[in-house]
Every structure is written in structure tokens, then in C-alpha cells.
Image (cartoon, rainbow, N blue to C red; front, side, top):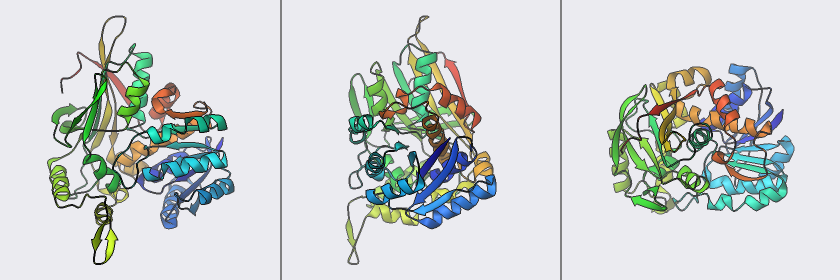
Length: 401
């Protein structure tokens, strides 16, 4: 049905191309590219071993627009799936416009020298993509991505609007390491150390990072401490669902993780500005990333489950109701299927499904879109048949956090 170019050979890229290979009726030709060719070749070998499907591999610098355009034309791809770093989003969108193909990513643009992520830079491409007759889908991971599609589905089928939404991201897994991040350490630590923000009564409310903690009993995981954070889907949800009174994002962390991050921040290892070391300029956070465990190597070690979902309250004809919609994902089951832990799996699978929606023509309107703006039904069906089944229950009331 479609030819796809995937850029990014980390844990998410590995899962996405594996799941694409498992859906050959949709993905007829897959090319995987990264700055490091050997990573692509390792992923391709694993895909071939598990599925029998051969994918093409090549090297590219995602910041080099001309090189990416040449690769797009050589591959014949009609869709570029960006699973590289968020710093590279705009360069890849430029390449798609020049080469005339559609675009999809999992995380919004963030300048490399400023720990600030927002959609304004990518939303500014709306007219250019629309005039070119091309579609760009932003944030088709789990959060953002599935959590936003959950909200759209609940709003379409269960409620007449959204008054309150809390997004709860729980990783109940344990990899046995003293300190390791579940996805790219640089991006993870930049997110965690950022000022917490949530939307309430028409404005942003700011809180110092990692200072608001609440215990919550997660289905099949148990009680975990979750922390109020800022996450990019809050910006798009409050924009596209203007009736929202309050939108918040919570993520679980163990005490050991919090202690490690606090110490690293106190000693300057989370800095993103250059420092001189023995006559060479280095970025402390990038150096820290180089000595931490690679998240893509943690799959075999990680046990336990994730639970990610939305608690949403809104009006209905019978009065106000509260729905909790969520997915449970088992780290060991993910590793058995694709050789990955559940955090990469829960991002890579939705990236594949979003790409399928575009190749099938279900998500086809020209322009730049966040996932909650698109019809959720076919995407939700594919979650159930591709390893991320979801469930929805009605709660007596919205929890007080």
C-alpha cells in the first residue's frame, strides 16, 4: 500500500519498523535511516530474523535537508516517519516539503540550546503543507499521541465535551539499574527538570519541577508516586478542545530516580550550555547521556508493566460523567514479541499506526495536525489488534489530586 522512510534507529525506531514489517499489506517498502548505519543494520537483522521481511538501511544526517531530500527521492517514499531527536523536526519537515511527501513524528520541536518545547514552530508550517497538498501529523507516540486520541475518542463517544483531563503515565517496570532512563536520557532529563505547568481556567499555572507529588493506585501496577509535569499535549489539547477548564500531566518516578536527578542537577550535570573541559567544549547533559545505560539495551532486563491513560470529566445528557481510559503494557511480553521494553513499544507502535492511518488515506487532509484533531476510531481499532489494547471504565467522580 505504501513506501515509508523511517529516520531514527533508537529503541522507538526499532519497534516501529518491526511492527511495520508485521503489517506488510500496509507497508510494502520500508527504508530505515540514521546517522549511524550500524544501528540500522542491527535493527534490520532483527526484523528479518523475527518476520522474514527485508528492510533497506542507509545513513543520513537528519539536519542536512539536501541529503534527506536526496534520500527521499532515492527511496521513493511517500511518507517520512521522524523518530529522530526533536531538534531535527523542522529540518525534516523542510525536506518533506521540498521532496513532496507526507510527514509524521512523535515529539514536538525543541531547540537544542534551549530546554523549551512547544508546537508554535511546527504549527507555523500549516499553510505551507496545506498549499502543497501534503499532510503532517504531529505527536503520534503514546503521550503525546494515544493519550490525545483517547481524549478525542471519549469526547466523540462518551461525553459532550471535556471539562477536566488528567493524563497519567505510570511505568511500574524495574530494570535493576541504580539509575537509567526509559527513553533518550538527554530528552528525558530535560523534560523532568523543566518547570511544571498545567492549564487551569484559561491560563498556565507554573510549579517548580518535581515538587507536586500524589500517590495513585494504578490498575495492574499498584500504588505509585506520580509528579506533576509539563508535557506538550497539554498545549494542543487546550487549543483544540477550548472548553477544557483544567488539563494536567502526571508521571511516576521512584525515590531513587528523583534522588539521582536532584544530585545531578545540583552538581551541574544536567546543564545544556557549553563548559570547557581540558581545553574542549562539552555539553554536560550530552556527556551524561554517553555514560548512562542505553534505553534500547534495557529490554531484556526490565520486568513489570506500564499503565498510561486519561481521566476525563465532562457533560452528558444525563449529567456530568468521568471516564478513565487506559492501556496496560507488559515489559516482558514486549521483549518476547519485538526485543524491546514497553516504553519504546508504547511509542513505536502508535508511530506505526499513525503512519498506517496516513498511508490508508484515513488521515489525509492537507495541513499540519495534532492527533486529537483527527478521527480516532480506526486508530483505536488498530491499537487493539497491534499489541496495545485499551479499556475504559466509568468512575464515580474525578479524583482529587
